[in-house]
Length: 408
Image: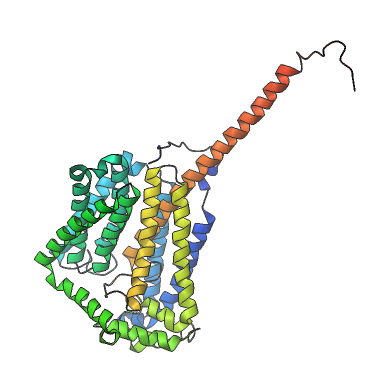
């Protein structure tokens, strides 16, 4: 891991440095998502609240909140997650909320589907693991000091989420843990051991509380053997929407699958709405946007000041893109139905706020790296100018031409 670099506020006004390519990709996804959400939600919104705009307006409120949190995290020094023990407080609070949900008996704290601790867990697990892995260094490779504690935290959080039947979120947690452990220097054999221990612990929790979760995995394997025998009505109806959309779609807002076929067109199945209304071309553009987000995020991770910044950015951007591709894979029948949202697209406050929070942290890491780079450039330029000035002052007064030297 790289050496940590402490930064002080820059009087030259470089605190507003923004990674424009990354921000542009995020903006494109947000605009794309708002357009598709309005198209996919107006019918459901009318049937629920007699207002075609209610779901969309609620999403706008969550968007404003998420942008506010993103701006705060953008200006926050990400080293505070480690120095002020904020990462420990965050993961402890998340586990407490997940346990609370068990007693409530719902995936949401307040009885709706907008505030779900499982969404918060994806953000806090990345922050906690990045801080923990960076602090431990090579000690993570020791079985009793690194593998066991990491497996326990992954198994506990992943198991608590899976109990809520949020299988995709649990899979995301395990995937994030393995990725960050690998980036921190873990070997493939250690990753395999970590996977076995953590998933065994998580599976044990699920077996005790919600054994019916395993039915989703069974349905998936049935679909792999025979695509016509897929056990999910959602997937079969999604196929119909894609077939109706063809190459270029039926037009934005003109789809009918959201009205008569898809069970949750504004959340889990919104990609099927994209396929019907914008066709294969529109769907491909969305897939490419997520790929560009991953590409630019990895560049930011590579340029980060230290190992903590690299782990944070890589973990966060991988989480967002991984969840997006899992949702897409579910809709086209490549993975079992797990109920995960499509980032920036699906209606839901928790997912949008935590996703934008991750974006704020990523841009904050990029900001600090760029500030330090520009400071180094100014120091180097100042040193060159200073040396040239010293050369002139030291050479001109003391210069004497040897006698007999011929002038030209």
